[in-house]
Length: 354
Ligand code: GYE
Image (cartoon, rainbow, N blue to C red; front, top):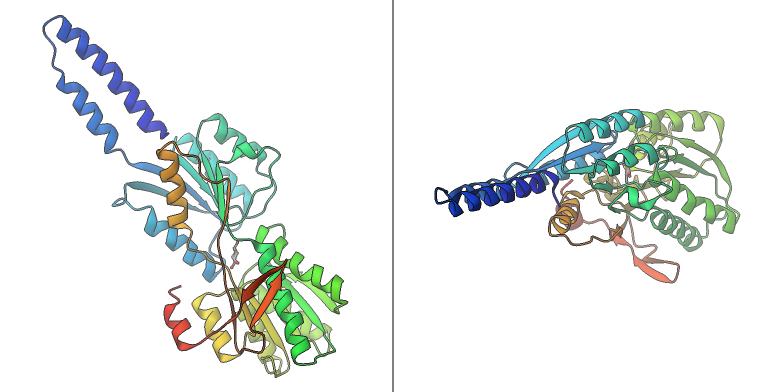
């Protein structure tokens, strides 16, 4: 139940009681009660959203989805805070939201750990917290009301299964693999790295190095440049998001190599933003495993449930696809489930809005 709304309901009830006693005394005006009711029902819902930053195209699409959902016209006041990838900024944003007595706090956490204290403060203040995108790792699950986002480990497993199937289909024996990781400690990094690590262990792949590219294009490029200086004959580059892949591709080309599955180096990516899919269509990215950023309506659905005193699902995963340059591998099987691979055509490109 919305706190400001509750406050108004209580105020309305008091007014009604007073009006009733005045009427009983013969001099009352019962319309006071209606005014209070009207005020209550036209109340805007205030949402404080602590966003990680603006590090990637995915993030831009995610912010846009939140902003276009929580509008004045839809009955919301959105307080948007960009933490510039720093947890301390997110913690102070949450403290500000508590001070402003918002109705809901929405948190897209930069990393999983370190939230117990501040989420405890929100709980103490009686403000529901909805976690979106990456997860939090807290001792007490009651510190947040609900979470919605992606199954990052499944994304990693699907990508690794594709790489395995691709290698076998093309009879490639010699793998020299590098991994440009996301922000260390972020669920998206933990899951995508784990999917790869497990496959490396199971298949005995030659993983030369893992280094963070912090989910940005600039860092992706820098890390790739240094790996190219250090190792000869890298042939698979597993990037953990599109922007890192863009940076890595620039670095590979600048070093004089050709990018593509049948060229010098194969690039893997996650997100499948419009720019990311363009590079799949051109062949510079071999496989792009989708991660859906359009969480605004999903968070709103949770808030509506809470407003209606319903209990939202504690954790909800989003369904996601895989996009490839060609149909060498038509599907992969992970944990007994088959996932189709879609070849990027003009039609696929046309349907992608972000
Ligand atoms: O993959 C990346 C962004 O947490 C799913 O963060 C998100 C990741 C996304 O910077 O592009």
